[in-house]
Image (cartoon, rainbow, N blue to C red; front, side):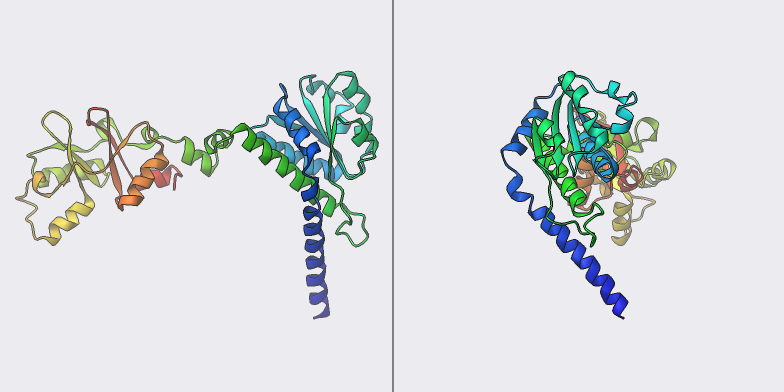
Length: 324
């Protein structure tokens, strides 16, 4: 029981110390932070993030967050930079260097070359009087009062503070650029958001011969055969000139049976839903999904500018496409 209590106390102490480290950052979002943002916004190249050890892991994540939120960025390991990877950095780039001590040898070694190439340097350190902070054009102060490690040695609170400061930088830049959800989707085409924001109705709809269709005056029996053959759970009903007259779905069939209508004698005109809700091929699939959800329907007819049906889709199509 005592061990259980000790484990809980240790975890809660860690979280409290790291919360305090994050809170200490708030007054440091100042002129230096603004200058760092302005330097990156005016940069014609990329943000190159460097860091060693735990700072390197945090730097890698910051670079990934920047890259996915509108700021072209990548991570370079400082030790590898001294052995050829420095060639990846150009004079149009900005270096964002992370080091809690501000005196990491592998990074300090790069400073003369960074200066010689005229590359602008932003540092993120826990020591504003360190060689790295003094060499930088602007230093982001990420110092912490105490590491969560009881020995005050293992990077814990300091790495959390650096990560949060990196997120603050990325989001401030995102908002300054007017970065949108659609821009984000282009950086994440394989993710759920990418599918929701990039996929269009024309990418998932059934068109051509796969579109079930009958004309006004068709018997309900023949309409049901068309539905069965195409397997979409609905059929489009056309006017004589090819425009949309209505739609007949599995739900309409159930309602027809509930009314006691003889399906062998009825005509499609008697039982169809006149016109019905429609979508456009160029619409986002997510917009079509919202129409279905708002009106509690399972299928949509896709029409062109002249109200001619060009396709159809249902909830199963959107589900398969990962839109819902």
